[in-house]
Length: 491
Image (tube, rainbow, N blue to C red):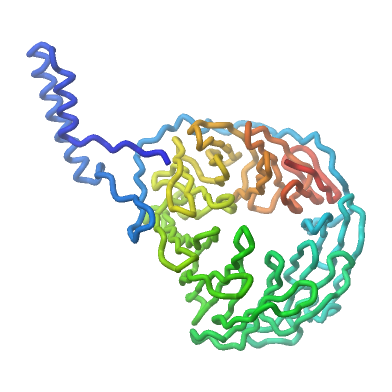
């Protein structure tokens, strides 16, 4: 973490001035003394308006808020000049495979192959892109009324389809969940009682709710199911409208959210995946949450630009539910000042996220400790933080100028230009970042983590994961277009 030296107080300014005037002629000292008086008076006025304050307590693991200490003056040497014409060079990589496909096709990894999904079909491919099975979804063919499962999830063993039960109008309703064998596409088991279904790590979670929302445990029952057989591992009583929303990096803890007494009473808790036991932390609020190995973190945004656009991060220990730390950070504001933009689409990897000072300088926040590990020297929009790299956006209306800082050395590592989007999302690779615009238009620009070199891919985004990306029919960021589904290897 880089400490910012405190501003000098008026007595310190006078003492320094006296030292500088030692040995100077009396006439010069008289003139200089008058200047000092003016400077001290001006400084006192500046202090009165809150221009200087002593360092505050920034200790971790206390009940005190970790407010940021951020100077107003910033080095704007990285601020971009006016946008000019540029192109992102096209990749020279050849795709591993290509297939005919529709514009709405999405690609996901499943075992050693891939799953292609559209509104009306699911297709399993092997590693070479050859079809191993295909399942067409017709109206009511899966017993889903409107027909087409709204949620599709998969791991190396199963594909989970879930959608509304036909003719079911109770609240919160019941879904039909169909679990398929990932290798063959054949049905393994089915459930028609759960209101919410999720596949997380190696478990299918079903939440069966009974319609009450009175703040009582047991208004929903959450069960963990063996994915291939549907056998129940455990069942636990939970609050109303409970569903699984996340899992810890090691798979040992699962994050659930409940709406205990209504839409404004959201509670997030952590359960042990082996037993279903509650692991301490729980809180209310309609906020963004993160889960690390040791903490559950809530980010609560103040989206009123008049208040300066801030987000309050609060962390609870998963072990005992005690509050570990709290910190107020800045979040980006719209260019015209009319709106607060909140955190980026993909604020970070692991236990680090990209946030901002209240004066617009991107920073790296450690979710485990609450510490600010590094602050950028220039203003910009925080995009993401990963390892020792902080990526910021210093672009204008026509393009995004991404700047990568090495947080270990404190130096700018690279600058990359890509077309602008409403928001930027990032897919993390071992040696590169895949950057896509959040407006759903052409995306996928590969940016080297080490040097910032860029390459574009023909076509629209269709999916990505560790070691691969997929493009679909449409225009790419560069000059190329695609009429096929194509899969590329990336590092």
